[in-house]
Image (cartoon, rainbow, N blue to C red; front, side):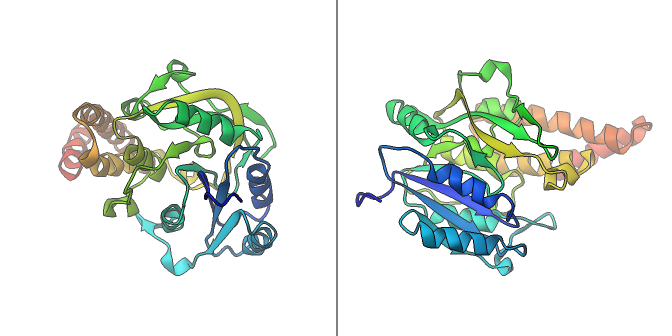
Length: 292
């Protein structure tokens, strides 16, 4: 590694990814760049042998990989469910790079010039805070599909308000962002659903977001994934929790978007909860408006 220090910190969080973590790390190690980068590898006390694989890589590539072994005692629970939030936050805190790239331990990169392309773009466009790119989805049958994003945003500029208006269509392993000066996580970040969407609010602020049309990463879809397990009712409730907590840092225009999304979500929840009883739908909507 160059003595000037890393320009990019690649944050990899992993838990029970033994079958995938090597492919993840190899995709990062193959990067061809004109600048130094580091890998912040946060291993969350896996029970399947992932930790041993991480140790072997950290020993072999000690000039690039900084391994942090977490304890399950530090796990943050969100709405009663264990998450990797603490591992992620602590990994980001120790990052030294001007830019942060993300890749969870079961995803991987496919283009050796991925980091170079993204850094070149952000360096040339200081009015942008974050860029991402197209990604492939890989299901458990080994089938690939292109990760869909709204057509309006392909190769176009947009802002955080647009993410709120649609949905979080950014694949995590495609993200690179500039870390703001004096950045720190607010206390509410520990418990808010949708940590990635919340993070983008913190790092973009009034700056723009760019989608590069190159397909440079793969996102695995697991049937046992947390979000896939949740029923529609629980998913909609999570959005209400998210809107309630994120609104405090949003601009007026962003707050207007959230207000509309909140009302639509409340309507959806009432129909899901009481599909055949209009009276109880109205009562439930009043309850949700009071609570959220």
